[in-house]
Amino acid sequence: MPNLSDKGIYLPPSPIRKLVPFAERAKSRGLKVYHLNIGQPDIRTPQIAVEAVKAIQENVFAYGHSAGNESYRRKLVRYYQGVGIDVTPDDMVITVGGSEAIFMAMTICLNPGDEVIVPEPFYANYNGFAMEAGVNIKPISSTIANDFALPPMEDFERLITPRTKAILICNPNNPTGYVYSKEEYAQLRDIVLRHDLYLMVDEVYREFCYDGTECFSVMNLQGLEQNVVMIDSVSKRYSMCGVRLGTLVTRNQDIIAAALRMGQARLCPPYLAQVAAEAALDAPASYFKEVHDEYAARRNCIIKALNQIEGVYTPMPKGSFYSIVKLPIDSSERFAQWLLEEFEYKGQTVMVAPATGFYASCYLGHDEIRIAYVINQHDLLAAAECLKQALLVYPGRTIHR
Image (cartoon, rainbow, N blue to C red):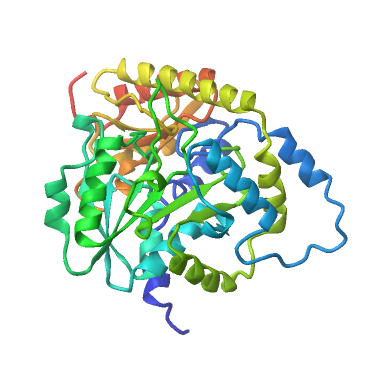
């Protein structure tokens, strides 16, 4: 039998999904499993998007434009103007999820063997995208001690080599919930200009900032027009993860042209997804207020409950709907599997994501998990109680009760 390629063999599994078989077995034993492991919201998709798909009357679903339907891109221009971002329909390529946009950006802007600096912990799938693109991630560590703020610029400077071509951040951040300030962006701007790098920013959680925190867009950094690539997606904004539709946005027309050439591999973004997403742009402001307020309430609920558990600490997220939680445990991977295989509390248990999968540095994240507060408050409190009870009996607990 012929061998697989190195990429086929070594592509990393998702730390978010690899425990699914254990969760399925726990459910088959009759346990209720609270899913804190994955950012799949239970928030309703805007009804206007659902109705738009139901109303489709075309007899033929034909190929579309490789950049995405012009009507959708023009409508996106109005959306971006509404959040203070000035772009044209020619500054964007509609992609198969934000994931394709990130992969395109890495492949277009970097050669195999080039390096991209990424603050860790970071969205776990960046690892896989980088390996597929032949790109090396150079992690720069942020810490829970200062709520995962941007590391000092001297730390970035120490990592830059002749192979460094880009910096990639997620803002608001998955998995930490941190929101980068204008001042932090200004520091990044200076280092990007000094070393002529690309600055790639994943902004898919733009709508989810709390306590008056402002989400400043990378597209509004002056003097970086040719260096900036913004990644966007409808998955979380409209609770439409399954439509798999994202956007690559840049004023650098060479990147746009290359993305269109890459887009030949899938010919065009999915038609039905664009119908749903275009309609979702007409969702009323009340939809976003309701969703925003619900996530803020869920955040307050779960963060308070977790920080009341002995030995547990998690920062108060400024945005997104994730947080990294520090636990008194020996191994987050062992703990996550143990929760599903050996623990139950009143017929319940919890599925969490080990934070090790969100770090490139192998020595980090072993006493941390990532949670997603995308389930209702009643279930969040029940999940927190399960974790509290689990920590009382977990064999690998690292502090005295």
